[in-house]
Image (tube, rainbow, N blue to C red; front, side, top):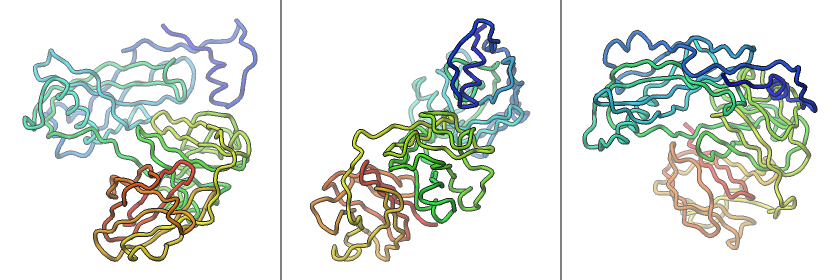
Length: 380
């Protein structure tokens, strides 16, 4: 049985440091794999059509770590066609802290099963396919994934699926805080930039005091403060820490300087990376220009936080091509080989790069002139 010092957990959860480690400290016991049971939903007694169902809800016993601490539960799936030759385990993105209701969208399960069957040699043209599927829970303590990681017992069922690539959507999260402001209208102008793998960043000069919380798009639109993501201790300025979205508190940067703030939703953690360059180039303006206005006249953006620019604009013609440029001149401009869509709303700009392509409609535009990261979000 693995063991973990409780003071290490307490330091993480309370965001405090412990300078000593005494032999008499109590220990947190990490259970063995398979020490807690997973229960599949009753519907899995039948063959599950993953193409025509929305989600499956699993239940599990709570693993006994010997200490009350927040546990993260994530589902993994493997597949087999003959019941003996199994694929590797395929992780899904959805996580939960309630072992009695671990709901996973079937599109994530279908993606995992598709990947598993492709690993076993199946090709896209052979789908839809029926497979034996086994499920398990990956459980770990928040912020201590590597040292507290364990797996549940397995549950078996049969499922059919079309060829479904694993979903890798970038969600939309917004900064609300000391800048741009503690309200929904201000937060809408400060989108975190997706990095892939459920990781999001924001680079600017932070204040060093109660800098931010994070709102999902849905919670921003409803101004739901109860679900805002934050740290455990209000005003914590540690270089990294755990993220919670129940009673989340304001996170502060370690100092009042330029940092990249990183939000890892998958592991529910955050970190600060101080920029080497603390005096980045300043621009008097960043704007949009393109064939929508005959490449003449600029749609100026607003600098909502240092080096982060925003504007909402409507294109009234089809087949739009545009670029971002600085100071209403062409010596500094950003483009990308990118066609904007609801799924492809983010890119990294290239100096003097290709024209960005976009359909008619209303969009929110974001660009960071330090990182060259850009987002163009359709307004529905």
